[in-house]
Image 1 (cartoon, rainbow, N blue to C red):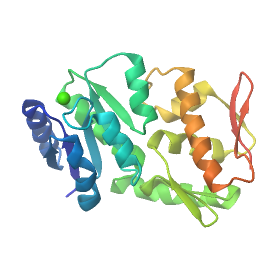
Image 2: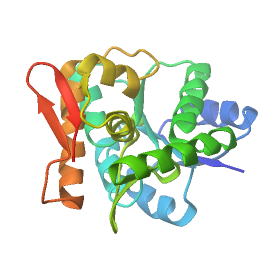
Image 3: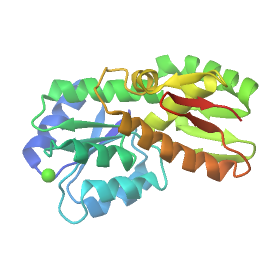
Image 4: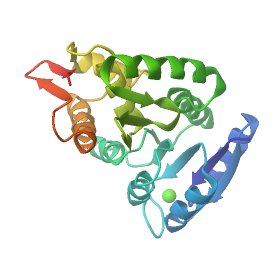
Length: 233
Ligand code: CA
């Protein structure tokens, strides 16, 4: 059974989440301390992490950063801080989604399923994944591996966040074509979330940095002044 890790210091919230997730067919494991997360994730490889922002020991943002150094396992941040800046911070550190407290457990389940669907961590998505990976590979020299949220370039590879993956896949699907920020936003956030242009820019910036490590010789993603971005090796 797929295990979802719940990192939450409030037992009541953790308990409700565990119950709802169990009803949806997921096993769960509950951790209260931010300091224990990385070790557990390495040993048990959960399919997804629900990560509270305010935690004793090490807070959610630090934990997110730490986990992102070794895995692309989807992370959904749980946060009571509603300021936009905090949401952005969470995403820039590599979280795949965020949910604001107070939330309904049903909303959490829906988001969990959506993120797992997007990351290809379920059976129905795996066929499409292979097709996409092969197509991208053939045309552009990039291989995008959705199951592992990984991009390969030659013998190199690097892990991406879900949003970075969606952006790269969209751009690389039509080399040379300019994509508007609006279009990219819709691809990266299929739930029609309203995000600012700056959010897209910041994800692209991080994506570029990662691609730059794979291919320092040339730029793969180009910005088109006041319009958007294109992929052109
Ligand atoms: Ca908390």
